[in-house]
Picture: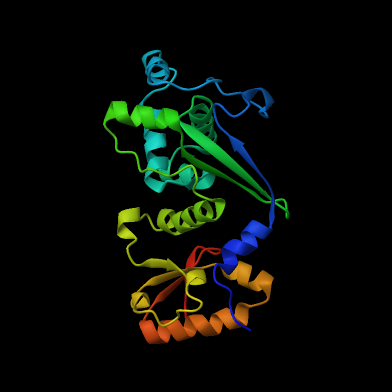
Length: 232
């Protein structure tokens, strides 16, 4: 049996029940729960008004800046990074969404699990421009597979208190099939999800391949499921 490239991402996408996008100008009249404050197009003056009226403040800007650093941030990652009380942090995230600083992708899986991914919205870009903060552009055409990979890489970065600029030699194991002896794996950290491997029934195959890469390249293996390094 041969491993298929991107097998983890393909598995996750195959488990999608639906994806619900929520942002300020996407049919706010049909939104579940709280509607966005801005129901048309957000302008720089709109964001300036929110800050001048103190509807938004440096706490909202700081949380939006944190999401900007990660580009695609999951709800639990944001809570961990801010160090805020969970309920308080969720209130701030909600305000950032309804005010147009962030937008939300809620991904529901067939096994009833779900994740909430957040990215900087137009209002956040305008606020950054005013505050002199550089926006890390994420194209709106970035597909869900790429966004999932960004979120999953951030699992490692958040748990290990690392910034993206420090992650120069971190790769996904699912990218290696077809090029397992690439020299870029020398001394690298490979990210793998052993829970997905177990669900696919390929745990032994992956174990053997990981051991080979560790022996040949002195790589380290990090399990995104347990959020721990594996001893190979």
